Length: 184
Image 1 (cartoon, rainbow, N blue to C red):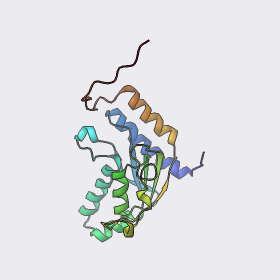
Image 2: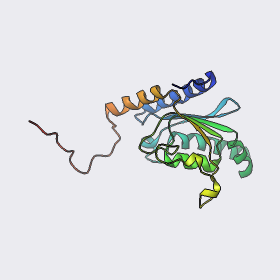
Image 3: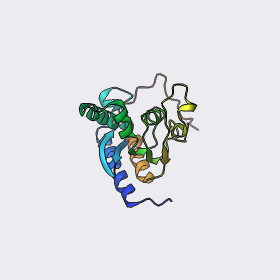
Image 4: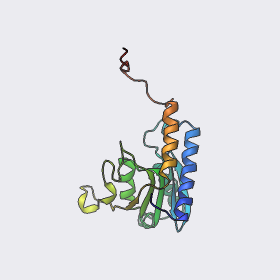
């Protein structure tokens, strides 16, 4: 097991708390914080069911808080980009492909995550969007970022397991009957 600094663990603990909040709202328990100069400046939790919007992942919630605040403060696009390049993101589960692409385009400096996302991970599990730069992307703008996984992974997995073991009450009803188990 990799050892992580006390600061890294304390910041991931804030993300874990956001994931616990998501779980209380019957959301997939993923939470995050965005950090600048060692201080959490925004946080987010999954809100896809609550908002009925599949894009409302924890990372997008935190990003939107900062975008709104910085735009209200009168910052230009260039100034906002500079601010994101000084930020780190701590999230309980590896960012999905959508979130990893957004983080790359925004130019976030680095991401620390808990457990891998074997179905939708955009930071190495499925795609490695954190490694891509503008020259590799047809639309340009992607900057790439460093990633460190496995920070408090067992805590993140435990939250996800507790959610899926109880059953997702917000999951759509299957269109086909589930396969019956064979009996002897």
